Image (tube, rainbow, N blue to C red; front, side, top):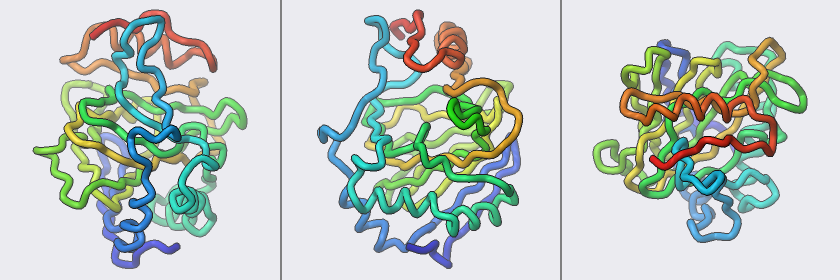
Length: 253
């Protein structure tokens, strides 16, 4: 497996560094791998928190995930291993200029993700420090497996890039097939996905680096102007919980 020599890179500097790489892999290879993506009813998926303490989780809804590499279809598992390989990692170092990073092979925040129609993920910054090896989550990477004519106006589901003023999205990145999005992770690397109108598929993975970071191994959700006031309060409570703890205050939207 190799990076397509005809890929195209777009760099976004503000509000935080983002690289968008189109046609990352050979298109025929992506089409073959995409055939193995499990149907939404497959028992391989798990759905995370639909409800907490009997109340609707207002932070994210209708998202399916497979985080165990051994449970992934073979072709998709091979792709994830390719993303973890030293050769691919060196390419990312060259593109971003960030050195001394390593793939998170524990898949702590990684894996296959399907967002079903009417699903969403409110604005958040990603986890900051790995709870086991204590390395900082330096880069978040998203590789998309969507229909070739995915359209923002029809399908929704763009990756929204926000700054810390939380007034409006600064960029909207379509989850185009064979597109890789990379961004630098920080306490204010705010992003999210509004309500989608068609199925949205991605592989997400992380690169780690030694360095100081907030002691937080969960995403920190924050409220947009149109979100319920509880979002920021609940998001902050959830972000600093220890593993297996659940926030108390998730409320109906």
